[in-house]
Amino acid sequence: MKVVISLLSNAGILVGLISMIGLILQKKSVDDVIKGTAKTIIGFLVFGIGSSAIGGALGNFNTLFQKGFGITGVVTQVEAATALAQNEYGTIVAIVMIIGFAMNLFFARVTRFKNIFLTGQHSLYFACVLTLVLKACNVSNIVTIIVGGTLLGFSAASLPGLCQKYMRKITGSDALAIGHYNHLAYAFSGFLGGKVGNPEHSTENFKFPKWLSLFRDFIMCVAVVMVIIFYVAAIAAGQEATQELAKNVHWLVFPLLQGLTFAAGMHVLITGVRMFISEITAAFVAISEKYIPNSRPAVDCPSVFPFAPTAVILGFISAYAAGLVAMAVMILVKSPIVMIPSASIAFFSGGTAGVFGNSTGGWKGCIAGSFIAGILLVSLPLMLYPVFAQLGIVGASFPNVDYNIVGTILYKITQFIQSVIH
Image (cartoon, rainbow, N blue to C red):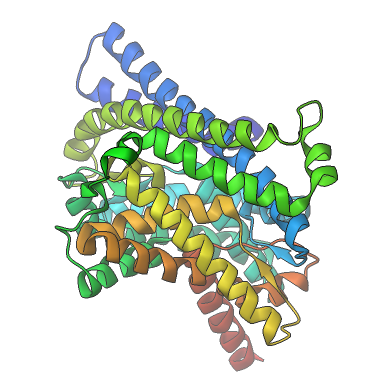
């Protein structure tokens, strides 16, 4: 059981297995199967290395920002909340996740929802949310596993479809879906972009003056922006706090290195994304044709980054600013719970929302869509945080939009059914 859980929890192994099956079904040679499988896994691992570098840098930024501006509250960081949930309900969560993947394949086979969700870590996070919601309602373990697994599988097959018409605009084909549980936010960003802007005014068409020509290079643009942001946070936090985080590096050099590390991570991430997507898409054709007709792989959100890299940065900044606005409102109204926006979540989710908004509304759609996404990522966790707190899950929350909307609906329905029964 532990081996199976470990395999299905590792997204790189999962996409590698899918790629291998597809290549075998195409009757490729042993050499081609080995090479295609290895390239898929390596590409995904390269993508993971880039993500880890970005996440580590953003974690340091969060620390400096909170110390610099004296903010305390609940961190909107899904990894922290997941760790707390697994400590309490690890076995149930794992079984819900496994059944969820099996039900995803079932729903993709027998319904019109043809997406196969391959972002393993997000299946784990959603399994945690569903488990916690049902256990907060005192549902038995068996019912939690059956209901949670079924709902997870249905969500995996259906929710990516909300974004598909925008994915076609972004990628230029229908071969790929997005598998990241902010589908409702991304779809709304794409919808809003069409209302507020013009896709011809894309962020990727920005004309920089000659003296800003270095910004034509995306990685250089990322490096400059992130170095500036890190210095603002470091100066606000002060020498002592920054030096403590920097360890043996001088506190004034630390922000420079962190900003450049972020840019390097972005370069690595995009390289990995391009590598594994080309392999998994080709291998998926056989699976789709033979077993699940018209199915498509739903992969993690950075899969859209190469199509509009400038929109990613603009979306990140807009989403993080929106999160700070939402946090400020909570402080002003003296909310008993104050959610702190996570730079990491704002980057990946806000940046992705920016790409979707840009696809239909250019730079205006990018800013508007990611701003709304940033508000939702910080405000929606308020709905379920008190529910999770009953179970001792405190200090961290699940920020993703789909988790909170689906989780809240499930909680209300479960409570209603229990009130009728009793």
